[in-house]
Amino acid sequence: MIAVVYSGSKTAYWKIAQDGKTIAECNMPGINPCFNDQKSILQFLNKKSILVNHAESIKKIYVFAAGASSEERRNELAETLGMFFRYSKITVKDDLYGAAISACYNNPGIVGLLGSGANCAYYDGKKPEKNNFGLGYILGDEGSANYLGKTLLKYFVQDKLPKDLHKKFELKYNLDRPQILERVYKRPLAQQFLSSFFDFFLENRNDKFLLGIIEKGFESYFNTYLLPTLKLHPGKEIHFVGLVAGNFQEELRATAKKHDLEITSITKEPIYNLLNYYSN
Image (cartoon, rainbow, N blue to C red; front, side, top):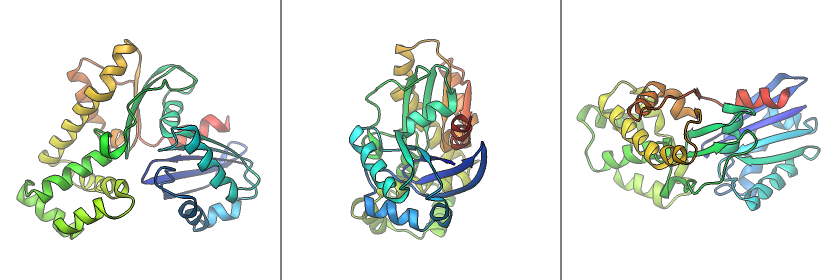
């Protein structure tokens, strides 16, 4: 029995399989080792009866998590998971590694990650090339759910949203300026708070003002991540992975077209391809 995990900062997706067939699955809060300590991760695990019931039967676990980009962080997360899954061999890589496998399998290509966070890398068919992009939700993540949520909150607090959107936001979230600033600057897990507002974009996906924010975010993503990567690896196929990319494919492809580029594939939820890869 194996388990495959793909975790952004907001949500971790779990799939458990035996003999190539999925036998159980669940979601839980993200297990980013930069933001979630050992105690909180173990609490998340113990709240999921599916994981509790299969903990001793799972022999291999393949984990791809945001924040697991250094060996120290990967070892920390593997150690924590090993306390719960005592009979499992646990392999931990970062989310970009998982995105690359899900999009390309063993073939080379450029992989763009647009989920709760953002990243990009050339993948040689074995591993993503090292880069300087992964700066997180404060210094980076252009075009991601974090970026979109941050931009939306900024417009709301500055009273720059159109009146109808402003009212919709107030009715849905019942937040004011002091509450927003406290949640962002004083409470933990600000990145999850910011990315949670991606739902507002989905619920109002045809609104021209919000589409403008998305288009600006995608343009910033291309200039910050994709175009510099393409400059080093011209002519390579381009793949995108993540909920933002998957939910706004038309806008993403339109941005690519502005730069005379074509996107080969867009994978909304990489967990399915990862499970298929490791089950076969």
